[in-house]
Image (cartoon, rainbow over the protein chains, first blue to last red):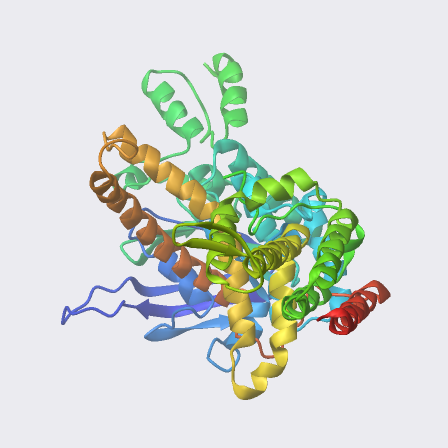
Length: 281
Length: 264
């Protein structure tokens, strides 16, 4: 498996007047392999947004290093790395640069000096990948939040990146928009094997990932598959993170004496567990 | 708001709409200069003729233009009256106390009013038939030579296009803030002017705060997407110069020649 991105003992503190500033990120190490979907979860102030900024060189770590494709991220290779790393931010409006959908998708291509003919092809291809090809000439204020985020994903995909980073990309969307965006990402992964890092506090989104990195107070608290992480149960709740709805319900049912077996991370699992529960007893 | 035609764009598929924005921009600027060549009845009639011709070509309804001219009617009448009463040439037509109207004054008043109206109408044709983003592109390309003397042409054009892009976003935002403040009992539409101006402050402060926040987010997003200035950038929106654009400029030169020939 090829390693795409790695953080090695990364420590970062924002400049402050305080003589002993608190580290926003402290001694965090992890690596992401090609084709993986990793979710970085944690409540506010856990350092997960700082990690996002460290990953694409908006900030540099004070200790440790960030490696992209085994190369240490520095001022020399910064733009090269950025061209291989797509990023989608939280606010759908504040990352829409172009006057129309196609202009916005072309923005990163223009920045990288891609010739016109190739651009046209890539813009159409990227918009088809997120199912927005019918909206070529639409202006951003005529799109829903979910549609804008899909355009933002297309804008990232147009450069054919190795890695897509979603920095709280669904947190400002309504449930339908969130569904649209997550389905798009899932489908992209199924079709192209894209590597995804999603930074989120939405646990329904985190469940979809292959691996979770659970941040707390700037430190890596736990890492593992969603199953392993959510098995921590009460510990998660103490650290200010909620459980997915199905899991919460399942725990309450168990407390009431209903004989349930599994973790029940998704609604479907819970339903299946419920209708077979009588046979268990 | 509906009546203001400055800066409004009516999408269409006419000869004028299809013209290259650079050609339209050059034509309008050329026309502004050429208009000043006219100084008698024949030349002013030619100008009116050309304006009507462009109107037909762009399929813009006359009623639409008349409505659009309403905001400048006052200025039009004012300049007309100024010339009517203060030009003292030719025969005396009418006298009442100190007010005297001469034939030359009447003539001059009408000419200036026509010149003014023709200029306003022609420039509104430009914005009515060209999308703001196309005008921005045209300005960027036409001003490109100024890069040699260190004018940041690309940056200015980008600023313009981003401002245009964010107008609707900020309008929505203003609307939201207005409703939020009204829900808290702020009164924006009644009372003396002084109170109303004061009531605008709690609208502007949150609007500015959020605009700065947006600007910061946008700058980050642009940087992450590889924006590092105009160097080495390619253009996705391409402009194409056709024979109709050359023709328009030829017509402009012909017009200048004709006006020069017939002017008194």
